[in-house]
Length: 614
Image (cartoon, rainbow, N blue to C red):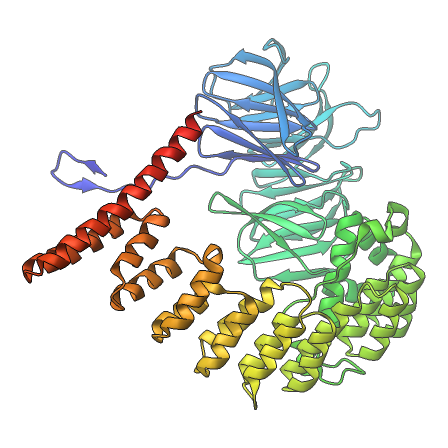
């Protein structure tokens, strides 16, 4: 808010533009105005500055940061504690306000209006040249015939120049266009590049022939896949589109500008916040299968990396097996409405290696699933030593007996999981008896108790108590489930007492006795289990003693458990009542008892303190 000379108050909304850069799997972005966050995979690092970060650029593990009066060059690395380390290797003063800022190999390229300048990491200006028009953007260059380092420059007049960095920015090729260049994005292998002009029209060019491969209007952001150069992602009119350069595409209703596309997920910039979204490849793969283009499909799947490949396979299984037209499914609606597929693949058991992801056998599994040839897919999984995935397919098809037989053949590791999945399916179909039996067979005692409590059929309280008696050892989940069901229902008091006795919950049982005025049971329980009762039970029992006229007993319990404040207040109230009623003999007796008990506890406290000091 700013007060104006006219007497009015002007309100302004301030925002910082999102500044970021990436190179392969490395990425960096500005956080606030003074910090840089660096990311590689699941590792992060933070670099703090005492000034506003104006521009950043990255080349491999080297990061350049431009402040208003200085440039810092950092070398990035990996720490053992899963964080990214950073070391400042160079810094030099630079007060000039440059338009573009690009890190190229071991030099820094900056531009001002139509001038292009090359600086060393020590801050020395090595080369300067003047171009035809103002420089709008700079990116890494297209691969040159001689393999020399180059940069690609976009000009205000629409021209795109690929310049060799040395000796004095000679032109490798020039691409003349009509509209000013806003952005240039290079593919990872530098064989293809994309241009977005001032009218937000996207053009993708072949690096060597400069022929247009693809063009789209109204594009807000664009990025190449970090591993597959012919796989692209761009945002257009409120949608996010992934596409191969040979025409296969899929659209998603997602907002934001894509800044990185790797594996099967895309990183989106939305209001200075980065959000990662995983994208399903089902639609694109189906298009490839429909055209018989197995080569393209294989390249998409097999280049996602070990972890991503397994993740995408799980997504494919979820999407395909979730189809309502599944052959062989007893209840296709239940299959389609299942909220989530969880495929548990234990790497240490399967010992998945990179060669396997790229093998034909892996691709056969995906192909069979996509073509609904489940028997073939299951056989391929077994041959690939992937029992968990084969069992998952059988479970999704509700072929329970086959799934159990396969689980038994793998040392029974997955048998309990299959039983619980079948129990969950049975519960959804209101087959409570079958669901309960399966839960108990698989050790799901808590689930069985919750199921019985939700339906409350017949003598359900006795069923739950019987389950608690058969549970081996102390099962905290089963105890918690039973307690929650009983306390949330109107049950017989004897059943509730039996529950607390079975579960060994002395505090709750004591509270139950005090609430129902069962003095003799409460006294017996307190004397036998005093060490297992918490403060809530102790205070409730002491109050019960007071109502029964045993104030001195309550006072002693308060003192034994360190609640002298409540104990002394209780005795004081009793003494005041006796004096008020002129029962002086009772008052004298009360005072003597109070003194005896209090002095005894005081002596114990002094003795304990003396022993501790010695």
